[in-house]
Image (cartoon, helix red, strand yellow):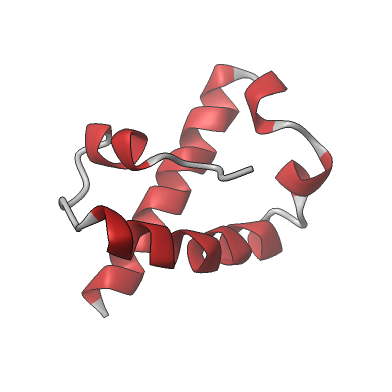
Length: 71
């Protein structure tokens, strides 16, 4: 399951990259966040988590996508 949708990405106010590029970068960004969080959402369903932590994680994935896009 993907941690973030393209619609969520744009709703967070990040640059509007094309959806194809978003889909290309999402797995790489997810891998980075999984490493930082020791695979928390690999073992726990993100949709069952509290909104605050879920929202922060999704914003972090979006920020990582933005970083990859910029570099």
